[in-house]
Structures are given as C-alpha cells and as structure tokens.
Amino acid sequence: MSSDPYTFVLGGGAAGFFAAITCAEDNPQARVTILEKSRTLLSKVRISGGGRCNVTHACFDPALLVQHYPRGGAALRGPFTRFQPRDTIAWFEQRGVQLKTESDGRVFPVTDRSETIVACLLNAAHASGPPASSRSRGWARAGVTIRTQVSIASIERDDRSGFVMRLKSGEMLTADRVLLATGSNPQGFAWAAALGHSIEPPVPSLFTFTVDDPRLHGLAGISVPNARVEIEGTSLTHSGPLLITHWGLSGPAILKLSAWGARVLHDRSYRVQLFIDWLADRHEDDVRHDLRAIKSDQARRVIGSSSPLGLSLRLWQQLIEAAGITGEQRWAELSKRQIAALIDQLKRGEYHVCGKGEFKEEFVTCGGVRLDEVNFRTMESRVCPGLYFAGEILDIDGLTGGFNFQAAWTTGWLAGRTMAA
Image (cartoon, rainbow, N blue to C red; front, side):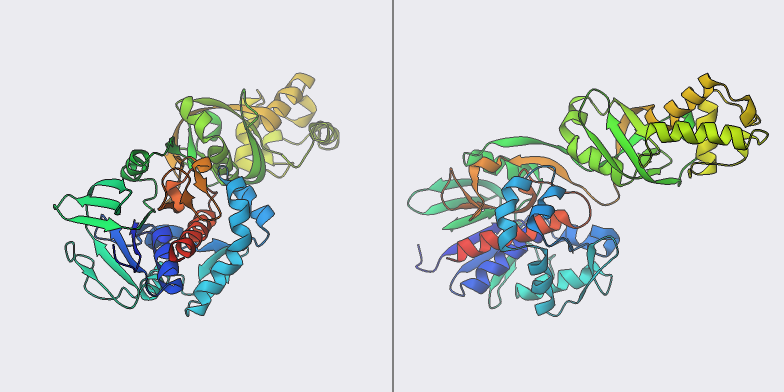
C-alpha cells in the first residue's frame, strides 16, 4: 500500500460528501474518492425542502436537539457537542453560502434553491469537471476524486491490503479505509452485514395516515392548531398541529406519531385505531362546563350555525352530527346524553387508520446498522477496523425540519476527521 492513505467513500449524498470534504481538507495527503452508483450526485439534497434544501434546524442545545430523533438521539448526544447546527451554519457561510432561519426554526439558503447547497458541496470537494454522466469516469482536483455510475459487486476485508472492492466492470480497488454513506439503500446494508454488522430491519419512519371516515369527508385542507393523537393499546401519543387531507390525516402531530411509532405501525400493517383530542389545550371538565354555559346562554340558537369552541365550522358540524345532533337542533334541546356524546367526539374520537402515505419528498426510514456496533466518537466500526459509517445507513432517523441532514453533517464530519488522522 502507498504511504498516503487511500479512503473510499461509498455514496455521493450529503453524509458522503461532508465526510470526503472533511477528510481531504484535514489531511491533504489523503487520497479520497467518492463512489456513487447513480449518475446524479447529492440527489436528496436537490429535492429536499421542496427544492429549497432544509439544511438544518436552529436548535443549538444538544440536549434539546437529540429530542427530535425517535432513534439515535442518545448516540448523537456526544457528537452534537462537537458538531451541531451552529457549526453547520458556520461551515456553509465560511464557504460563501448565506443561510436564513424561518419562524419555525428551519434553516434554508437565502436563495431558496437547493442548487446553492449542491454547488457549495461540489466546489468544496473540488469536483467541478466533466458531467456526471461520463460513465465510470473520475476527475480529480486538489482534494476529492468523484466517480459516478460505479457498481460494486463485493467488498472484503483483507488484513494485509485493507479493503478490496470488486466492481461489476471487473476493476478491483483497494483501500485503507472505507466509509459507507449509502443511506437506506439495501445494497449498503448488505455490504455492512457482509463485513460483520447487524442490521435493524428498515421500515418507513415519516408518513401520513390513510383514514376513510365520514367525519373527515369534504374537510381537506382544514387544520387544527393543537390536537392530541394516540394509538390505541400503546403509550404512543403526540400533540401538535393536525391537518385533514383528501386521504386522511397529516401535520406535525401525525408525523411525530408515525416516527415514534414506526415499528409498531409496521408490525400492525398500518391498521390501528387512532384517538383524536381535537381540543388538546382544554381539559374535558372545562369543555363540559362551556357546553352547559352555551346551552344556557344561547338556548334558542341553532347548534350547527356557529362553532363555539374555536374549531372550523365545517369540522364542528361533522362532529355534532357524529354525536347524534342535528344541524337544526337548538341548544335548549340538547340532552345530557348528547352533551356526553359530543364531548366524546371532541376529546376522544376514534378513527380507523387503514394505511399510510408518503410525506412530500421526505423518504425517511428507521433501521440500519446497529448503533452499539459503532464508536460514535470516531464513527468507526467496532467489529471491522477501518470501516466507517455516516448518515442514514445507521439506525438513526429524525423528524422533518432539517434534523436528518444535521445527523448526516455531524456523522460525516466525525468520520472525515477520524479518517484523515
């Protein structure tokens, strides 16, 4: 082997690029090559945030930041003390990319174009050159070599020569160090397993709920600022904005529930009973008191003519009908049984989830390389020396809002630093 270390990064996405750039910048003698199977580099960066690229989230306390990761939060606690969103923002701004923080904490380039982030990463990797469609060709600049449309047949660990990678073209590559940054690609999991690692089965982690219920028909687009959702028979419950869609339910409350309940929902084939508290900010006794007061104060008013508790009028009308109350019924005519039924609909309505949908362009999975088999100070394998991991190949997933990219930047930076040494 050459005295200069050979490092191969498998995967031309966010984590792979960040690791390669960090390694090359920290050790100019290192020979760093990114191998990407497709012809397109940084494909997920290009489409994220609706083409705007949600780079990270403006949460600068590691203890709070890890609370946005259904899996992997504990493992990321230490890494976030070394490279966190503030460092990500500084990294891009030092390279000429100005970022902005929106009211909900999401961070985007001021251009609102993901190509700004893509260009920055390509330039930092010194990778401008022949088009990515040049089949299996690489181009080198001061730091990183990039090869696209490279299909790897196998990876083996050799105690004498490090790693041996056989390409489907017949070419053979050797390396001192290999970083797997292949995302949730099954091939990456297969390589990790072949090198001695255990894989937690990947399942979807961020999705909407399919619900076909008459109470929701015709209400697409209506949102509730703070609802509480709970999966029957579990301790899984989350609160937040809830959005009614053409196919069922979405919004932050549902997405959180889908993330934390990813495995439970998968095991139940995405068919569960869902309880909804449409008035999460209000105690049931307060709702009962308010309904009785309205009955007394507005005795002659038609119940369906206005929504007295802050819900959308159309949603209110659907819920009172589900409680057995006619739209033309007056408040004075409301019985104790009907009040009880209405409170059930408002505070613990039961809905049948019969499937899942995708959440926009976010393709997030839980599962991957088991975290106890990786040293999170270095991102090096505990079972295969010289093998490193970064990004979604690990059993780590975050909520929407820039958290998955932050995990990619952090694990890529740590891996790059260690490989450079």
